[in-house]
Image (cartoon, rainbow, N blue to C red; front, side, top):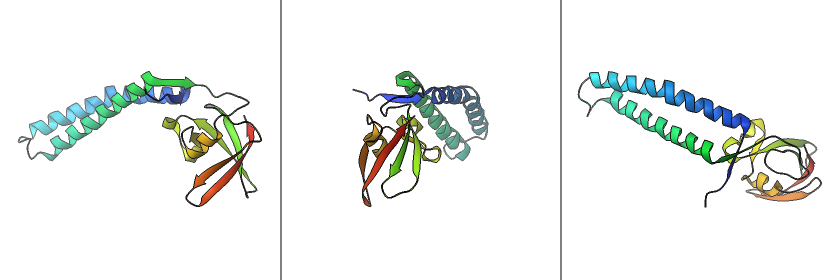
Amino acid sequence: MDEINYITEEKKQALIDELRVLTTIKRKEILESLEAAKALGDLSENAEYHQAREDQGKTEDRVHQIEYMLQSSVVVKKHQSSKVEIGTTVIVKKEGSKDSTTYSIVGAEEADMIHNKISNKSPLGEALFGKVKGDVVSIKTPKGLVKYTLVDIQ
């Protein structure tokens, strides 16, 4: 059984936009590169041709990956809840720290630590999932056990 993937409406739109670029502009560019490389002659030692073929393979792989994600993913909206789930924003405080940190809980495809988006499959996301305000979770890290208090759910 396949695991459910979750994406936000924004991620869905970004995937649709990327797919459009790949299937129109990028495919056309690659075909033009292949034609230009073929015109250079002997394909067995033609680096341009081999590079264009490699680009074509990578592009087609990405197209298939995006199509699969769009077909198989569940779109979740950012929302408020009394427990941690995909689409909620949480405020946590690491034990021993004065400051709290805000994270958005997202599906694995959207995880982005720079923007404080953590996956429901990440150690912290998994530990927080289903918890309520005030709960304390422990995460095993290379430096040992770290405790986080769930300060708020937005």
